[in-house]
Image 1: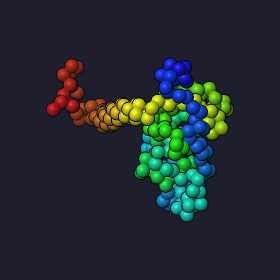
Image 2: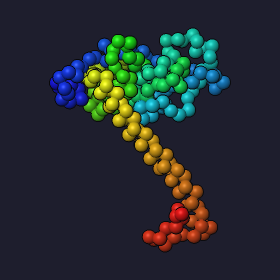
Image 3: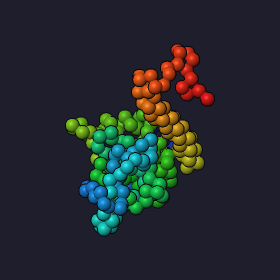
Image 4: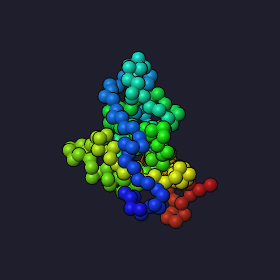
Length: 214
């Protein structure tokens, strides 16, 4: 059948996102440096995961907003800026708060959708294109939960969803490993350059580099 992501097997139905998930816009929050509850924002969405330093909120204030507490398996989607960028919550983020720049996409109990697959689905070029086309064109692009709820989602059997998610997870792990190598190499470069420029470290002949040998 013809779906948003292309031709798919006839036994893979397509559903609206709101048919399989609840969409919850994030809460306006105020950063409290002395707070103990992390607050997630669009900058924390990295390669389909949640990472990086977060703002924080006072625990007493967080208890007043149970609707905006993260559950394991929640897919957090940026609704401003780089709209459609996503990060999947794990047990580690359970109880955290998602801020106003995010939409929480939470699978319904009977939806038969693997949140890990859904995270992969959002990164498909055709899906990213759909979200970009439907975002409001202001100085800062944004998309509402109402518009996002209409996103067509292709639903393979759960076993295939699991396989897709596992394959993409391995590739994401490889990307992260290469990024760490690149960052470490850049740090070495920055440390070595001043030493080379002052003669404290001998420069190698072209083609006979020994700085990193052995």
